[in-house]
Structures are given as structure tokens and as C-alpha cells.
Length: 230
Image 1 (cartoon, rainbow, N blue to C red):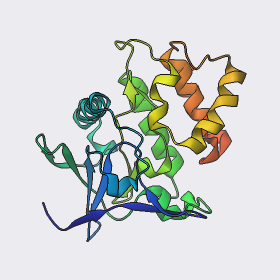
Image 2 (image 1 turned 180 degrees about the vertical axis):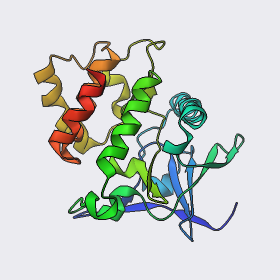
Image 3 (image 1 turned 30 degrees about the horizontal axis):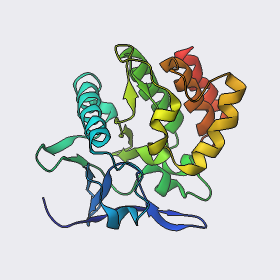
Image 4 (image 1 turned 135 degrees about the vertical axis):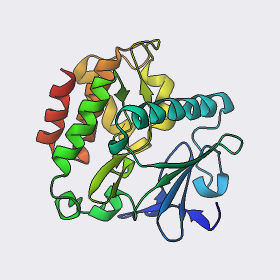
């Protein structure tokens, strides 16, 4: 597939910023295909590369393939259609219809209702699907969703775990959490009694993620998401 360009989010006060901290985001010029390229591209990341360890990049690629396939098998209506997977280039091509949910809503105002009036119900369905499949998903930023034919589609399954995984410490995953979100996370971790350097139950990290994303979604909605995992 050709005719792709870097995909950025237009962030208030910052201008064009990378869409993802781990992979390189590409989009077709007609905005119909999104490509997750698991390649540490310095030009795309503008010299602010965070995930530079090849083994960590491979782990994220493996998790993306695993859980995207899991969702595509059991809940195909909740994720974009996979058009192609290039195992050599480590590229996943997804069918979309325009820019991501956050960008459509306007990052400065985050007016999701104007984009998709029933987005809350649809996102809760996605959270319930994750819970049903035993998935803990921590990449919840509104740019991790696209709208296709009026349906909300979830992406970014690289930051997922199940109870079959060994517990992780928050410190071990800081390289793929933005500095702004890290600043928000630390006081919340302290309030929840989470030690950043100690292995933490995945459910606790999920609750922490919901708390953190109250900066991007209405707090009462995030509380509804928490109840799904309670």
C-alpha cells in the first residue's frame, strides 16, 4: 500500500504532535486507511523517541497482534477492519473514515457529542468486551478510537495484559506514557497506595488508567467504566 503520510494530532498550544509514543502513525492521503508502523522513526518522533529498546518494541508489536486479533475474532464490530498485516515491515493497515475521534472532537474542546451522540454507550460496550475477554487495556486516550459508519472503533492494543501475564511495575512502562500523563499519574498512584517500583495487580492499574483519563473524558463516565471492572 502506498500514498501514505505521517499522521499527527493538532494539539492546542503545541501544534502538530505525534499521534503515538511507541509506533509511527501513518495515514493514507484520502484518510481511509490508518497504519500502525512498529518502527522507531526519528523523523516522526522529532528526536523525542521514548521506546528505543528493540525488545520492548517487539513486545508491543506482539501484544498488538495478539489482542487486536482477539478482538477481531470475538468482537469484530468494535475494532477497525484489518486490511493487511505486513509481518516483515511490522505494519498493520486498518480501515478508517477520517481522522481519529479526539481530532474530530477538537482537542481543545473535546466535544465528543457533536461527533457521535451515543459515544458513551458505544465506548461502554467496548469496555465490557475487554472485561468479557479478560483484557486490561491502558491505552484509553480518545485518539485511540476512530469512527467508521457511525460506529466507534478501538485501536492500540499494545498496552494490554491479562491475568496470565506476570504483574508489572508502573516504572517498567513509563517509557510509553507521556510526560504530561506521568505528572498526572504520580499523585493518583500515591492516593491509591500504588508503589511505582513494585508489581501491581492489573485491575489496580486499570482503575488508575480510568482515573487518569478523567482529563479527557467526563469524570462520571470514567466512573461508569470503573464499575465494569469493579
